[in-house]
Image (spheres, rainbow, N blue to C red):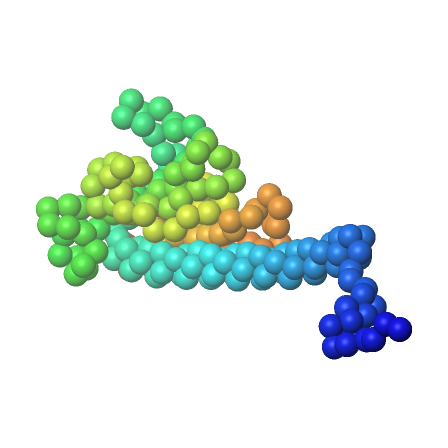
Length: 214
């Protein structure tokens, strides 16, 4: 007769317990990978959306600040010329950029020009040869370019954002159309556009003179 003791009882209980098979383990691991991947993808998407919204808000704020700075310069100017940006040899820059030349005499408006200067220039400069992405710069020297001027705003979608406006017996003005969009090719509906018409307060009232056509 075989007597069962505590040891044999433990062995029977251990022998009766079944573990996970290899297939079951692989299925569980696959499900975990799918769940973790979905969570990671959602987190990445949310992070990209937040970064995109922050970048767009920064572009819009920069555009508003640039327009406010431009408004101050134009108000102080006595004359203005809008033309294609040219290089040191007088040839148009390609891709085409545009320059707004403002005549602002020293002392005419505090904080607008540097000492001994008589003008302010704003210009658009193509970024990387693109025809849909331009940066806006400002300078009080004789040449407005990326090396010499102060950066104002990026992702401007068109080069010529200025046009002159004139009406009989009214001051000369500058019409501004400033569109900003860092995803203009894929999301044109996201364009943030600022428009304004600003008078040159130090100009003389237009009476049919040729100045308004220059």
